Length: 418
Image 1 (cartoon, one colour):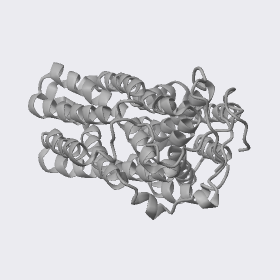
Image 2: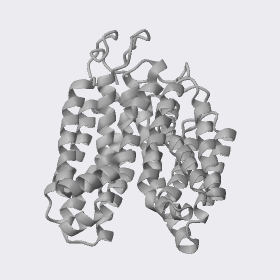
Image 3: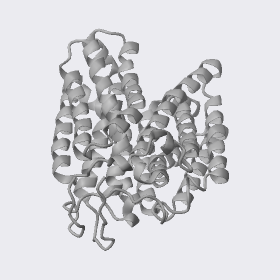
Image 4: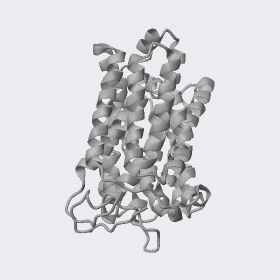
């Protein structure tokens, strides 16, 4: 890939491009989550059971998990902007197909294709954002570009449910397709072109995995996601123990707002204090689960613990992405694809674990199990994570130079082709 040197004195950030990435992520996460709030309507419209309709969420996540590494490896030599735009268009196509589809099989296929595109997109967004800014601003740029995720998680299901009720579920997907098309045009105009990796720069996937810190980081990411999803999947049922079963929407809104706050705080701290952010975040997860395990019958304590949990969740993806990008150097997109795969694997394993516990003993063991997982993650990160989670997210002096954008994105950089 062509490298450029970015002027550290360049004022401000490339907001238009970073926000385009954020909104693209917002649309992608909406596409993943909205069906959960519209299962009855979609089920009736496609004449299948709600259990079958629920597989529209599953196939999307499965596509992301299976596609991230192979598609990233396959496309890493291609110019990055067109590849990223294709991933957004795959989501647009899936939403348009869902809006018009008379058959479940057709909708299912569209969701699978969108999931494949989403897996590649998540592997690219972090690297794209970090290549658009000077070294000292990479963590902040990453946090901005990922800002659409907690917003979508906070409003995705309630927004989709409200839209589905007011304008119909097909119109809801049509609106998301239109928004995705607008984002595609915006991203094409706002994002600088970035060249693909040159042949001599392409590090084999196995070698990326063997980079110092990468394996620990992937293990931490998987265990963290299992711990989160073990509890989050069954949060509505758990809230009944504190009398909040009729306030699930309010509690989840608090969770989403807290996640946005956590992301904002992470963006302001991660460039200079990566390790401190990591340890504080995992300590917050552990503390929140301890409160829910011991005092989950108290509604005030429960809401407070869920707010802490939400703030930690807002920080976690960004800090893991920043750490993997630092550890992988010029192979950051492959590392990001591995991270996407591990997080999606955790998203699948967490509900499975929680479901088995719930079926056996109800919701009471769920926070204790997540507490044990988060405590193990915290201990592993503290004891063995200095390579994976160093003090700063800045690249070491002897690491491969990150791949920057051509200068037409920022006025103070030198021009290169993309």
